[in-house]
Image (cartoon, rainbow, N blue to C red; front, top):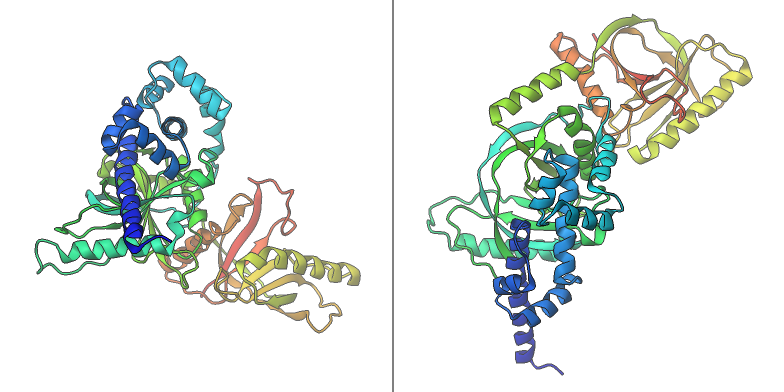
Length: 471
């Protein structure tokens, strides 16, 4: 049985090891182009090379050379996709002495030469349509900030224990701050994304996330155990603010749609996510987050460039007048993950009734949103087909009137008509009404120009309209 003293000694040893490894991992990521031998890194850690090698492998599940090689090559892969440097420049910056050595190592890791990898991966980033939902960032300049952090691997950043530990250390540092008269600031919880999911570059179990809390000015912080201290780099950032749970969808939209269309250049700094509450999965409610993307260039130039691009690519909103029409419809309460199946099944059922009864249609199928539909709101949503005459219907199919009058509308392609980006087009139509002095007269609707939920529709051909009656 381990005595209490022996247990305390073991815990102190683990804390000491994590503290020294933090210093080494930070040194590696800040000095990729330097000579990173076991001897040099063990000196940073304060261990002998023999003990350092064993301790590193035990904690990281990789040898020192494996870890350094992987981090260098994964960094190089991101620069090939997002950077403008030449292959040779990237290879040298990743710590390889010659282009040939870099090429061999890169091909061994990614099964493609650096040039082939760049050519294959860059086109996949480009979308042909401007997606406005949440992709109208604020361009700001951030100062450098100090961050108390824990380096997390894989899913460790989702642990409540990690965030409790950070809050304890940050609170202790704030209590020791130089001026007790300084007011307490709202906490800023940070996830620095050293690697990003969905890139196909870093395995999920190897993803590095620095979970951290921004330290108050004057806080006297001393790194201890797994909690280290780093500088959160300031500079110009595109800040995307989001309220809800689909954070991963927003990350994907930023890098696969907004970034190629905006044609800005990324700074060689990690993006990060900031919130006022600890980002622990499963927490109830919709947390507000701000995703910071580091940009290269001056604040003034970037603000004006993106404003001009936004105007250039903004969706066109038109107005027309429609007649009142008869309609058969089905109404249900559905959440967003149920919406696709509900729309598909309801349209097919209504179409069978119309065809079997030999009734003439009076327009395209519609989906009317009588309430918000997302992860937490379930509508209701009314699915309908306008008809010249109402056929014989059973109890759960309704008959009524599709309201006409003045409507504002915009046309979308299939590429644009997916959640959550589609909500931005609703915003565009609503803004048009506000700017022209109108108010909504009825709930908005989607009018399907081709067969609803048509998986074979051309992605860049008109697919549907967002229509909003106004008065």
